Length: 78
Image 1: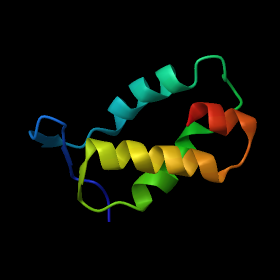
Image 2 (image 1 turned 90 degrees about the horizontal axis):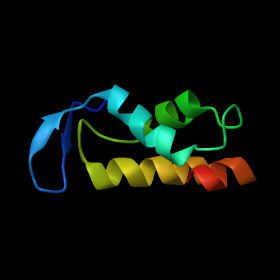
Image 3 (image 1 turned 120 degrees about the horizontal axis):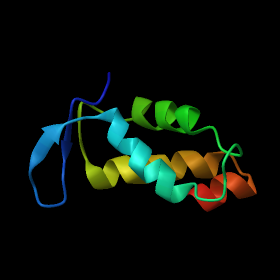
């Protein structure tokens, strides 16, 4: 199962666009270049979600996935 739609904070729904996660990654990984495998985090995080999720659920899944690595770099990313 893969994400098809994301419900934004204002209640609108849009098609899931995985490239938008790269914006979050650039912000969250500032100074961590090469220390975090972002693709692995994303794939693990979205595999746990349904076809329609809120942006908050998506962000929480990314954070929890980072924390599962139990390293300083991933903790900072989270």
